[in-house]
Image: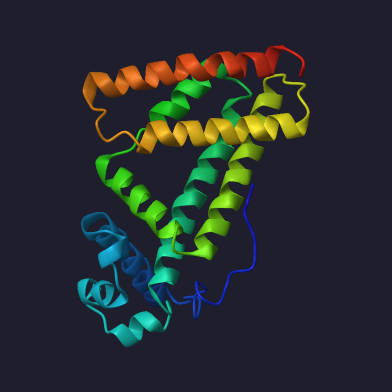
Length: 214
């Protein structure tokens, strides 16, 4: 489920870090940039602010990232790749774990911290300003849908691929709205929201697994 596509020069690294010191510098830049997105938001985000907070010169930052779009692209790429790595683990677990337990485990794993929710919202805001980020999101949605295709097939679904892909897209977008779009949900409200979400999607998953496509 790896996503590979040519990167636009707008968001492409000027040079890839090779030595350990350079890799540490890039990692620090991304860590600082991510925290600034969380704390100050995308509208206030700039390469100058990142360089200042990382305590490096703007020239050193520009050795790797030509602009703020490239920084945001790298942050988003890292986060989405981590999601896909988790999907690979869930596919392995599906060999031994029942589907309801696996889906509940996925919900537990993806219930995010407040900081992560803020980061996702700022990245979503950035997506509207960047065709490159929009393309990345489309590719990621298809990769997640493809994950659900394999997952549901592992549990015995005989639905055609196009139906499973659309089911996967629906599950992905519905889950995102639960995980990230409900700032009011805390404590009991949050747990009840997850329960209601499972009550809504579990019949769909059960049907995809046990019934033919009509």
